[in-house]
Amino acid sequence: MTIITDPLFYALAIPAVVALGLSKGGFAGVGQMATPLVALAMPPLEAAAIMLPIMIVQDASAVWVYRREYNKRILLIMIPGALVGIALAGLLASYISDSAVRIFIGGTTILFVLYSWIGPKKIAEEVPKAGIPGGVFWGAVSGFTSTICQAGGPPYQMYVMSQNLSKMVFVGTTAIMFATLNWVKIIPYAALGQFTTTGMMTSLALLPLALATNQLGFWLVRRTPQKLFYQITMVLMLLISIELTREGVTDLLRQP
Image (cartoon, rainbow, N blue to C red):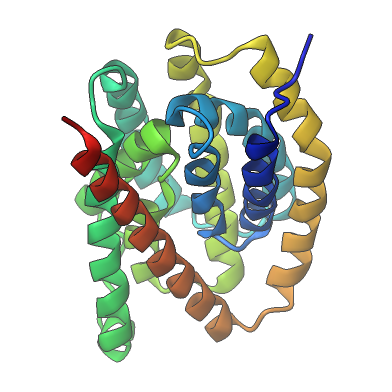
């Protein structure tokens, strides 16, 4: 049994795993940069498959920590849609260009963040109830993009951030949502042949770092004021969405 030995891979994978740990600890959005970083050294689906076991272990810790702080209604609305999105991604993954997905999700999220900054008072005063059609739609987009290019956070946040949840309920709901999605994603990844012995051993080698940064995330999120927490999340969403869009456009321009 061997692990990946390419120095470039670890130069990218270590900051990616740190980002995942902070994300699972509560800083939702940071982890969105993980797979794009690792994908600079290997195909995106292979990178996603290496990250997935790490994320599943981190999810278990996050769900336990935030098990009493979540919004049940949002989960019941979004998870069925997400399952549909995962199924569609599994069927189309061999044919669809993930660059197009990145451009779409990056562009729509940039618009959401800009609007939230321009009209935060209006959002706070006119927050709608967690509507079923919108939640199912964004859940499906989240499941689809999470499977294709590990970018499920922005569409999820497009819906959930507008619900004006308390900081800890937002974090707990996010933890349960993506723990569920990541377990289900095992099915399409296995069907696509993305799990290899080398990949699994590499995931195992990176796991201690992932768990350590996970605990750091738990500590930081409980000590960050709620207003600052949302400001940080919005900035991270914007930066990640710009990067997703840039990667997607670059990949499309390189295609013959």
